[in-house]
Image (cartoon, rainbow, N blue to C red):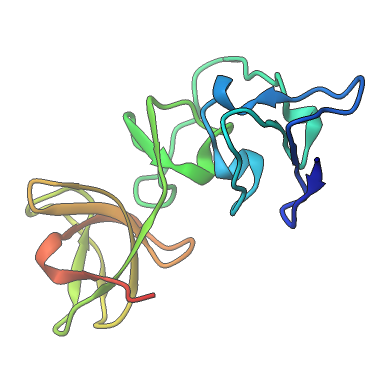
Length: 159
């Protein structure tokens, strides 16, 4: 029996005639595409909240515009998941919310000893997109500067 979920998508084993959808077993489940909180079995068909998005493709129309360092969560190898469809990079990351520990932290343009973009106060939110070599790359708050913070200056934000 089919039903409509709160995320606006349709989930069910039987598809109405003429409806475009994908079979759960044949796709990579993307909660941003199909709707957060959707739970489906491998035998169900899924219709995203925006059916026009099915089969949509992106074309490369030329080089990406230059970015001012520290303002957009995009690197050559990684970007914030919100940049998917806007910027082409090999990997997209869902931010992991952290807070700055007591004593504050410096947000750097590059790991280990680079220019300081901003001094983050204790308790400030920092959304981590990558952790590597004792450094976290991410964004200060929503829409803030993007850069590196020493991993030992952050802790996971309690939910």
